[in-house]
Image 1: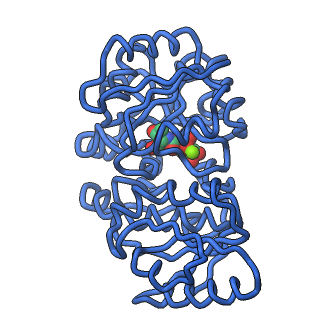
Image 2 (image 1 turned 120 degrees about the vertical axis):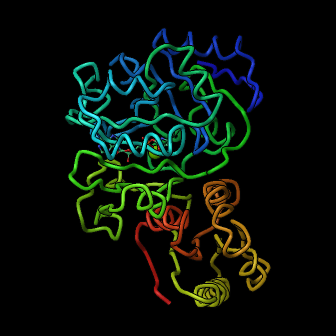
Length: 348
Ligand code: TXA
Ligand code: MG
């Protein structure tokens, strides 16, 4: 199969192009498309055969359930058996946007989507291209991130093609995604809603709306069974083993610079995922992937996956990463950095 590549305007996409892509979805094909978070790999979410093709294309374990994407808030009622008041409050405040809600499912939702769970994850994206594509398809669109399982999520159409060219019918290209990390996932089937994956809707925003939020203990480490099945798998892994240096006030920067110099002296090719300030401290032979100015958490989120993918083209033996603050969007960035590092963490 030759993957078609359609370039569209992010704000004013040509509907004739989106309608071609929607027809591919209706016929059971796979369409990668941009959202405000990352690129998704879409299929007709009511067609188990089409959904099975997503798992095959990505090499994704079948017990890792998919998010159903909708274009209109009313579609929730077809897919969710109950919408508790706290879920309704979150939908009113943050949809359309980077927030996925886990709710009790109806029988309309195929087992292939939920991995047999009695819950379903639902999201109404903010991206015009994504919403219009779903609306034209006329069905909920099942879509994980459009990467090979275990790799960093794609934030450009080029990232999608690097992983999935020849395995999917087409990719819609509307340029880089704005947020750059996946949506926040909140389980609304627990008495107090539980944050399963941090993302663009921050923990602070959730608390402002709900008053109280539980945080899945699995977000803190590797030895706890996570409730979002996807969180148990190795994720976001760059091309070489990575160690994350966590510390405040420049301590992580100093540790990364010191370790980089020591490893280079020992003949290793070193990569670094760091702030612009820390890049200045590194030996010039280090391959530096800079995610932004220190403290700019929007930039760190937007650039993180591109930074991790730079080592595909620029091979290194080891990667050293510098932590960011866990405030706001920083919690999502740190969650992805820790997973990308396989929880190899040095506290400094
Ligand atoms: O921003 C995003 O959410 C992107 C774009 C394309 O919308 N999608 C995305 O999908 O990140 P994916 O499949 O890469 O991540 C979905 C996460 C996984 O960790 C999965 O285990 C969890 O949501 N999930 C899905 N259904 C669930 C359910 N019923 N209960 C708990 N977790 C669920
Ligand atoms: Mg993913």
